[in-house]
Length: 264
Image (cartoon, rainbow, N blue to C red; front, side):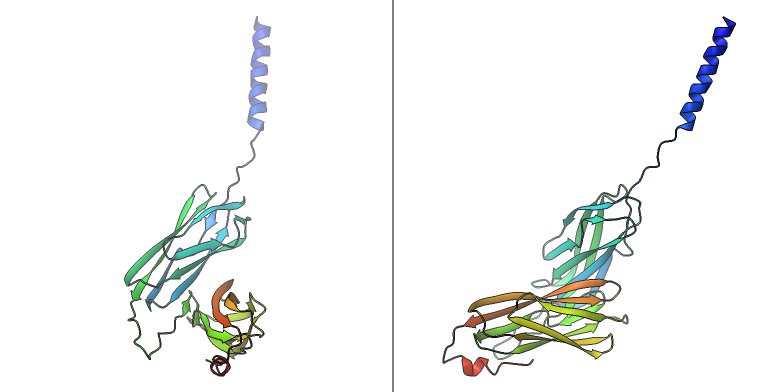
């Protein structure tokens, strides 16, 4: 009996040694890090569009999945990628139209992630909107602008108005730094081969001029496209400026007016 007990005790100790030596691998998890989750645009008129880019960084050791992005009324949002590898970044782009608003505003955007500690993360936009009276006949409406954390684009929309198929005309945009931080325009491209976009630097890393031109012959009907600006401030981001025109077939009543429409 004594021998049996010794054998049993020895086996039990051996089992404990084996169990204690078998270590399970450390669990991995993604981790969302945002340097800031809010943006205040100050006081702007209701003719403006606010564009904000938030930096999303994965400081964990597993892929961070962006499962869902929830915008709100008047504010659209999208991410540059739905899967952020460990140690890399993605960007949350928000476009908020102030049209039809007045007084203090606060908008929330939510992202749903695979980070166990931040399954839902909130981003907040705040500011004050000043309503602008409708212009009377013979006066022009205020020029809308696009505001981001560091960039201002004026106007926010390229409007060519009514054109003929042979109209060769242009419009100008101004891109400038909205803060003391430098801004660089790296590239400008058009989404339509009938619309051309070029840029030149006015003040180094502070101010640029964008020239948007029509390239006849133009197809008749509504012409809608975007000008995409690739801008570098604290990161590289893309800003889209819509372009609109209505093109008529050649008509004796239109060429004299539209052919002269060029410049600002």
